[in-house]
View 1 (cartoon, rainbow, N blue to C red):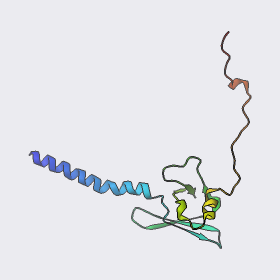
View 2 (cartoon, one colour):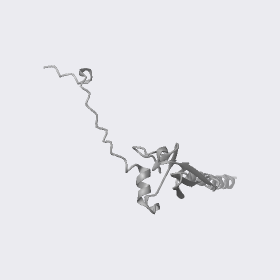
View 3 (cartoon, rainbow, N blue to C red):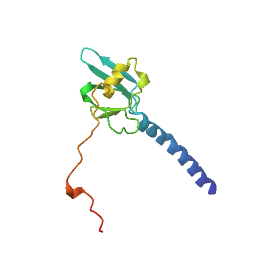
View 4 (tube, helix red, strand yellow):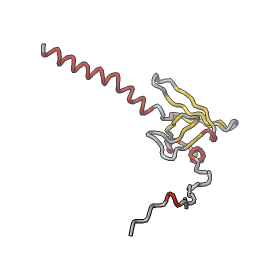
Length: 128
């Protein structure tokens, strides 16, 4: 009777890792771009990713559709048409395309705002 419980526990662990490992791998790698093509006529990029069933999915986007997050998430380089993508900079033959997608060719905004001079936000002075 004791052997049956050990056998069930071992096979449960094996079954768990057999079915959960591909799901975890998919969660990590679904954003990785395997191929990035540039259409010069339409000025569009085509990013190819692989889904859970190993089918290639293409995302077509323009530079205007790209948003680079201030704080990127896990395996996220940019967001194109609402889809998070992970691009490897060494993947590009021409660094100009990477610079263009990441927005390095745009002017820098340091987000320096004027300080708030409203007296209601200031700290009260300690009693003397």
